[in-house]
Amino acid sequence: MRFNNIDIRSENDSELTETIRSESSHIIDMYLRQLKFYDNDNCKKLNISCNEKIRHPFIQSCQNGYISLQMPFHSSHFQSLSPKEKSYFYLNLIHQSILFIGKQWGWNLPYFDFLRNDIISRNYKNQWMYGKPFQFLSENKFASLRVVQTIDRAVISLIITQNKKVIHKIELIKTEPSFWIYRQYLGEIQWISRDCLKVYDKNGKVIFDVTQI
Image 1 (spheres, rainbow, N blue to C red):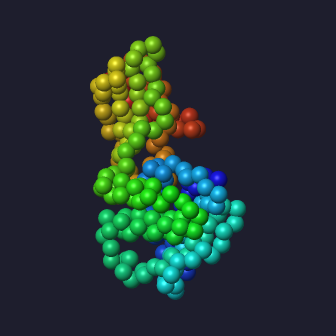
Image 2: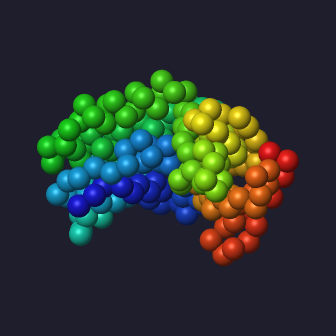
């Protein structure tokens, strides 16, 4: 099975769960985009429960690849952290959780060490091109959407290349860094003319209308 999903929640506080999920979503997104997936025999989704009543981690349940892991947590210390410190906290929480289950199942732990260190070395900056480039007719001219995700924002830009050289970079929108927020601005590009294009969502609604490229 493919491990490619993570959720972090509070074991005892539903309001805190909402906060944790909101604040950790960008780190989970960064982590899973780096990981893509990890083939193994035990886990396809890791559910991490932050529990203030325990001192040591333990697997609460393991059914059909859905792992429920209890991890020690101290909310009083957590609440005072800065956004960057919280990002570091969530990354370490994910890493320590994976090390705990990975030791039991013989995972390639140095690979996960590399993922953690790579995200830190990038200063929590995640950058990628969304989907495939869209070509204008028979010309060697392409349009793509680029996402740059950091701790506090996601920036979506239109990148135009011709003969593999970038000729235009147009910032379309800045939004929150969580995937469930910025995903609404990702869609299919269609050239209207040589100097005009539109970006459509899955329902055919125009998200962006770009002219005079």
